[in-house]
Length: 131
Image (cartoon, rainbow, N blue to C red):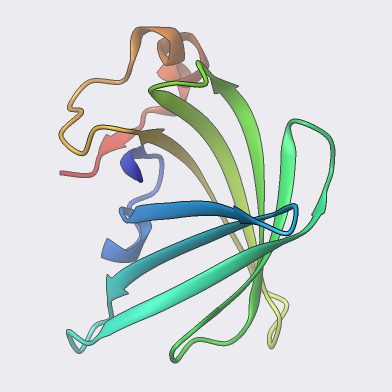
């Protein structure tokens, strides 16, 4: 599992989620849950539609109640073990509106500090802790 520990824009609780990842038929799959404004748990499932090289992954996502959306993750840096820094841009299929954010993912849910290797990438972004 991967935990979002730091974000640039804490727009809602759904941005600080736990990702479960897997690979199936050569495609990456990401699943996560969040509680909507009514407190109902929403499950979201995403699958890669194409891979733009090693640094960029494009996912097609849909959830229990949300419309389909496309999420592009650009890997800014990772140590391939404990952390990754991503730029994420989401495009909502129905409206065409976009939302972007910077995320730090960690294998540890209680990671209060941005990992040393990620500090150079994130120091100018003024990221906020999720916890």
